[in-house]
Amino acid sequence: MSHPLPTFTLAIEMDNLDKVSLDQFFQMLKRLESQTLSLDTADRVLLMNTEDISPQQLERLCKAFPWLEVINCGASLVYDAIKVRAAEHCESEVLVYADCDCIYEPQWLEEILRPFADPEVLVVVGECSTEITGPFTLALSMTRVFPRFSNETELGTARSYLFNNVAFRREALARVPFITDLPSERALCFIHAVEMRRQGITLVRNPRARSLHPNVKTVGQFFYGHFKRGLDTVCTASHFADPSGASYRSDSRWGKLVDRARQAMDEDPSRKWMMPLALPIVGFTLAIYAAGYAWGKLFIAPQVARSSGTSPQ
Image (cartoon, rainbow, N blue to C red):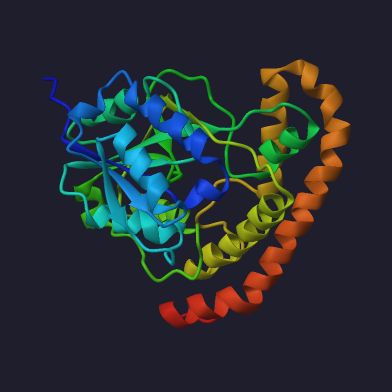
């Protein structure tokens, strides 16, 4: 027996507006407005305002998109905390997360919700990837958290999720609540995914629910992004008291890097000429990551150990 789609709330963060222009965010909202599943079917569309734009600019956005409901978060909340705050404002059966810097394919909203027609489905994960336009973006595709699109069409399972393309039944968040005291900006989604799987919750992956994430555009974003990944790795390892990652990660980081390179070549064999130029950039990103990891061992691991009652690893 088929079931109707559940009621849902869509939450859009604004913390990433330092990575895109206001005009690009405007275009992102235009794409959401033209989804194959109308936003009129949403209970609410929450705009999590972190004061990254002026009140006048925010007013212009809300006039252009009257379906937005502004939730003021203040300027101090980090990315993960904004996502947690959005959950506190959801009374629908399902909460869908989107990010202000991503571009969502026209059928994305319909596809992220479609599996919930099965009342047993508690979490649906979409796919988010990046463009490869040259050696620099090829290197980023190998070292950042965004995998290549699978180009599959059938539902599968996921081991983790990204907050820019995921939906939860509130029942799932009640069973496995978000952790609110992590000393990290963006480690929550991976840790939460592991905890959900350990509690027997299946993360359903719908490869048709696709979004495109922008590549970094400034030197600051490049350095900070990879440095922060090192911090998040330490936060995750400290939380699970497992520096090796063997208990929560299915593959090695080196294996993931090689696999990403293979996938990029399979997508377009002409990219092979880029690889010799991309590899030095990969090495540089790994050095930045290592610096973040070392910093995290000094300052992040002790904080996690104190909050969890474990010894620093």
